[in-house]
Image 1 (cartoon, one colour):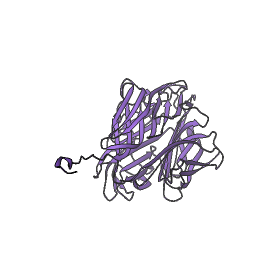
Image 2: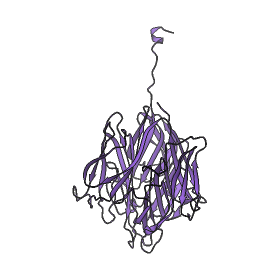
Image 3: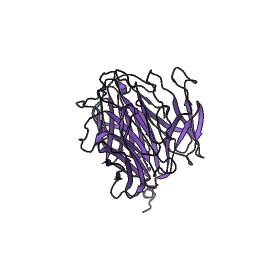
Image 4: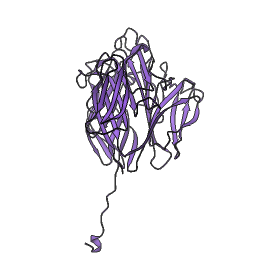
Length: 448
């Protein structure tokens, strides 16, 4: 059946030039994969403290980045209260964290690269540049015989239609990162505008078809007098980068199938296919980063797209057939799929990681159509904590929940704050298969 080992923890990153930070969990052993995320939250900031400037970075690592592309990160920022909205994003194919991202594409305070991976009970990250603060980085480590194969890479997109890539095995789960029209294989690049897209696809057990896929894409009207954050949530595509100037997406990307030999067939959509939905055509500068892994027999992933509950109390998320062991959650304020609104719904979202013992939530808030523009981000030591788009340090959480339990066939979140109407959520759940109980009939036959 195999065993899945998980750990989730927060460490302040060493702020000195070329300083090292040991990201580890006591007695964990050597990890196979580290998934990382951070906001502007620093070592001295209280739990759930809202920090001026909306910043977020997400990445992964499974090696030192010196050979194949085995770590990648992308991050974005919307500056707090500028005269004209200032924003930027950063991406790297050789680091797992971009920390202290600066608006207007002026740079990054520090990149953190996994320079020793694995290290006993975690990995060692080395930071380049002198950080202005000891940013808190959230790390989730995964290991164990339940992960049978893994690989990372970049796929260049050159035209609409179908194309393939192959990680070398039939993947069960594939994570995707993208940024409009950026070369995700580039080393340590920055650019203007908030541009960020994260997605995931899960294969049906024992088949080549896709059980589920989903994504969150974020952009803005960079340098506009009144900031206008954009966001799109999709339940049919793993990348749907926003167009900052209207309600269209730039382009879209869906996973069609994952073959037994490993070929992942993806389909790219752009304005040449549907000008009503998409505003751009795919060019040679379009890339996506991907991380794929396969689970051993006895463990199964699920991709769940659903809406948030509308009242306080325990919400039960059905995970038929498995007992959850690790969860990645995306919470939005959006009430429709595949739409790109310029509204308060677009300005706030969060990403959480959970296992049975620990939960962390990073949230991002950017006020819609405000000049000056209030923005903030935070880190919470609970399953869900997502303030509204107001971006004020006095703002309270509009979504707040703690993990109640992981159970056979479900996970439960206990909500203390939510909206009166449901908003879109994405859950990637990895868990152990539920083994059906059997009752001996020997007693009824007079045996024993």
